[in-house]
Length: 79
Image 1 (tube, rainbow, N blue to C red):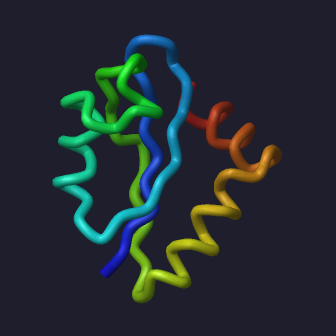
Image 2 (image 1 turned 180 degrees about the vertical axis):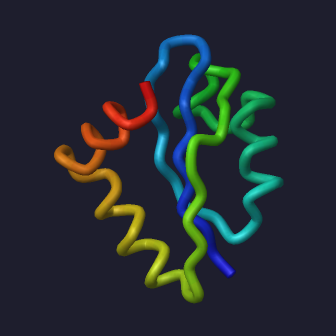
């Protein structure tokens, strides 16, 4: 099982969208500063997780979620 996840930074309010096959481990990595792209924006809260059967499905969904119009709809929905 693979997951697409949306995190919100409690520090600056920005969103981070990613994919993983181990959601618990990945969230811990983000919140412990092990991910360079999110290190300065910790801590994070999980806003949404989407389960996918395959890595390819998760990759496509992640890219879809990262598109400008989709990202903006997530921002508006989670304020």
